[in-house]
Image (cartoon, rainbow, N blue to C red; front, side):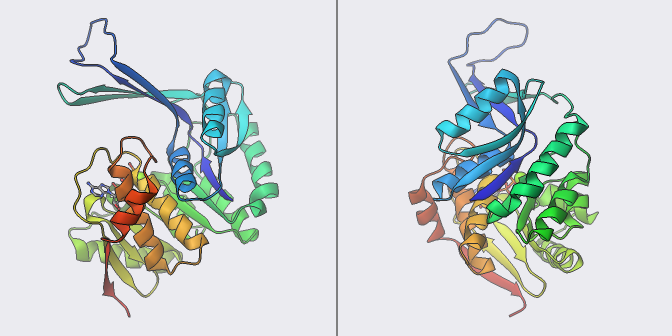
Length: 312
Ligand SMILES: Nc1ncnc2c1ncn2[C@@H]1O[C@H](COP(=O)(O)OP(=O)(O)OP(=O)(O)O)[C@@H](O)[C@H]1O
Ligand SMILES: [Mg+2]
């Protein structure tokens, strides 16, 4: 079992509105709603890859019930702490005629500190039920920025590996607790390293430096170019084939799922990253965050290349 912590849960609602206009009543062509948040996407991807994921974090109200039940219907386990307030809804308005996407992301209510403590108590006593833990996304209001760092320390104490995919201060603090792996994209990396890498050699250097400094595996995902992966001594560029994509939303989460699958099934690090890149690219071939087919993963995987840039 893999625990996918999703602190900032939401209903992900997409309405398809042809020729969307402001100040008008409109009747959408289609409405889609799914349990959302990066941890939910990771869990969905892990389920497709044949794993048994469980999503944790905080949910509340009717929206919380929708998220929890929706995941269970998908065959994904849940272990949420319940709050008294409604979970948020993130609304995306897609206009296929004018090719626009308008996104309204609620900030959400603050998680009360006693609910943060409740999660910590639960995590401390249940972490050993899991082979690995993923922490994904931003922290909701009310959750201290040292949350990931503290949870990683607890997981360390229990000898359970952690994979961290976040940004800003939550990532900056989290990485100091030495998770097994961090997966920033280029923007998150620039923020963490304090400067933007200028080219592939800059990315390679940044990945390698972070890996040594924080004693962690580093995978920098770089969209269509795949990923640059580093351990203390080696750096690889893992490249997907060129494909025509439908939607890359949730590709980073699918990458993290693929890597987690690989590392919990004793793959060599570079092979786990290869599997992650294949899952990320397969996700981009299908509409829906964390939605892809195993046959797409397999056909992409056969075309992923691994180039060792440093070490041997
Ligand atoms: N245009 C694309 N073509 C092929 N593969 C892609 C494309 N965009 C993303 N991918 C695949 O998905 C992986 C992760 O993508 P990306 O670097 O965009 O993650 P991210 O920014 O963390 O995304 P997320 O929105 O899920 O957080 C890449 O390593 C690659 O395998
Ligand atoms: Mg990401």
